[in-house]
Image (cartoon, rainbow, N blue to C red; front, side):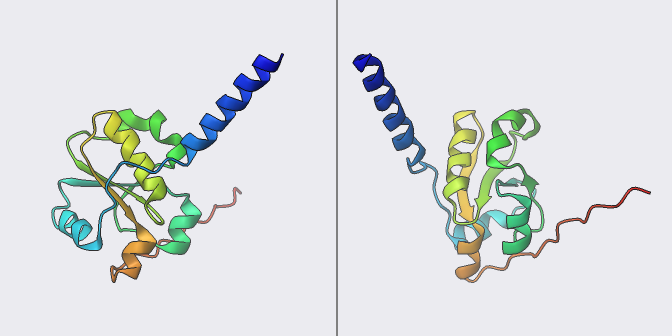
Amino acid sequence: MRKLILITLLAAAAAFAQSGTPAKAKTLTRAEFDQLLATPDKVLLIDVRRPDEISSNGGFPVYLSIQIGELEKHLDAIPKDRIIVTVSNHAARGGKAADLLASHGFNVAGAVGAETYEKEGGTLTRIEVPKKVAKE
């Protein structure tokens, strides 16, 4: 019984430690990100935030919205012929998403934090969440 408890505690500690592991993906500066945006036909932005975060904090005019928890389920929908930049508020979730995509063979430039980008002088687009239409 003691052995089982010890193994369970070790597994829980390992899972907890792994969840806080920093991403390996590069966090892009505003200048690096702007340079990538200069060739929009070669870049794909994947925003891994919730829709309410995008609408309240702002985002970029064109992006693919896939929340980080759903990303692995939608890998087949992501084109492999583009340079990918993942987006979150401060690049932490974006970095984890970038690592996941890179591990599946995608060409990932890195992650950018929308709020960080704005603090560095970049301009974000304010996007309203569509209102639900009442059924008649």
